[in-house]
Length: 235
Image (cartoon, one colour):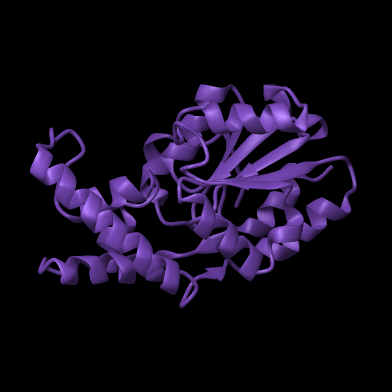
């Protein structure tokens, strides 16, 4: 079902910016397995996949920090910072080898992207993730999504991550479009806040990894399936 909180003028859209995890692909299992491998390495108790999923969205360093039990506003001492950095390295190395064990493209994504691309209305599509750029691009390439996107940026592509608008502003500049001609599509409040901060439209997807966060920060439009993108974005 499509829920409209603020109508997006699809006849004016020229740039669609997609989140990756929880929006285009379901990466929950591989991320959870990699976090639990890290925890096991440091003799920490394993976490449920659903618990780890609530930590996803703000980038790998924050995912590791939360999984180790450090709350976001906890001031770290030097020893804790070193520990988290070591754990992050372990996590990233493990994830690099296992990022495609179970990750798959959500049902309906490819069909929807094909229909939007086939409209041939000058629409540009890109990916902006908080996941590091190398695994982001590797997943897009391996799962048959590469040809849809002009560019794929990750959480370490810029000095700041979402919800800071730097990544969106870069994509706007590269595509030569204005803020009112762009929309960000994502599964968490991070993406919706990014849209607000950049002054672009937003579309929340309720099937992803962080749907509970959309209850407090909904998008201009909300969809329950990737197939509904066609009705929202295609002229």
